[in-house]
Image (cartoon, rainbow, N blue to C red; front, side, top):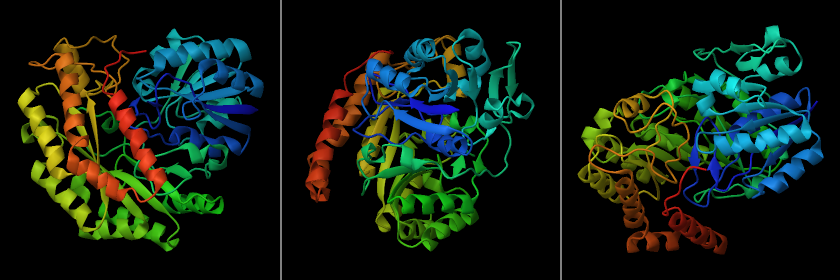
Amino acid sequence: MRILLLNPPGDRLYMRANYCTGTAKANAYWQPIDLAVQSGVLSTQHEVSVIDAIIERLSSSKAAARITSLKPDVIFFITASCSWKADFAFLSRVKKATGAKMIASGGFLLEMGEQILSEHSFLDAILTDFTSDGLLAYLGGRTGDVKDMIFRDPSGEIVSKQNRYSKAEFAYPAPRHDLFPLSRYRLPWAQHRPMATVITSLGCPFSCTFCSNQLRTYRTRNIENVKEELLFLDSIGVHELHFVDYNMIVGKERATKLLSAIISLGKRFSFDCINRVDTLDDELCRLLRDAGCHTIQLGVESGSDEILAEYSKGMTTDVIREGFRLCRKYGLKTVGFFLIGLPGETEETIQKTIDFAIELDCDFASFATVDPYIGTKLRQDAIKAGYITENDTQFDGGAYTAIGTEQLSKEQVWRLRNTAVRKFYFRPSFVLKKLRMARRPSTLWGYFLDALTIARNMLPRKAS
């Protein structure tokens, strides 16, 4: 079969991969991991092509023309809460034009898959684990062997075959990174191009009540399987990696084995990763540096210890300070993630977060308002408080505010979010630091584009 892996077009830089949702808050975009993993799985039995309409900046009409010209039998696409209504409208038109079987992957579909499938006739199936080979059995007509999917059987009945609570180690064939426009993907802190996305674990073992990642069982990938993929990337000349695990360093023993495996390949790669602050120590920071890590993205969320405790973050501001100190000690750049407007917040607690971000002096910071992710305790509390209804399923905390707080309207929360962005990024000391770091004209130009995107994203927008 001819299978197209598709990141649908959109009017913003929608981030849809790894069951996440949002709009890029800077001039940054990375290879969608869902599509990358399935490119390896599906290429074992089928002819695979890729269109990333977001990074290629394709309009809906141009994307539709490209898709039609490929004459796909199957389209596997990613979608997310930030854009799913527009995505579905586009794919419904493509279905009529091509007759292709439509299979989706997306975070909100893990909680609403059966309902969505029953309400949208153009959609044929949903893959609920993008590391699974369940699609091969489905496309081969072996419905009895299908796993990790929600689909219609030949009679039209919706069937759910999921094993969401498995803790089994996973592995998959090396992704076909060569099919993706890797030179187009960019992160402000990346050191080289082309850049590829890699994952070594799924889900999250922690229980922050605002986050949807804790709804998925934490599972790890076979380390030898990771090495095989890295060797393939080396063979095609890719040496910059973006690890998209929500916590790459979980469990010191496994983390040590994983980083040691990367080190054993020689100094072939530089990379960034995402992690919790409180899992870092001197030994792990040293291993990260020696393995080629240059930047760690760290979830801070709030500068208020009360707010951190309320949402089960499991750490204090003092612990966060120590984690950032360790990163500086080993020359690791930091990206801090901050949430503005969690229910229960006041202008005072938000100001604490802004002050804390400046105190930590991250190399980069991301400020977003709160998304009431489907399945989270935060969402249920927001529904009970009347901030949203069960029918509110599209939101994008990087582009507009979905909920207010007891003391702050949605408009006030958005203004405070913009205050955070302005106070952090437009400090003279921060600007001078970035100018000193920009050793190449291309880096300086990238920072300029980042600034433009950040400024543009300060304008409030509504759901598509």
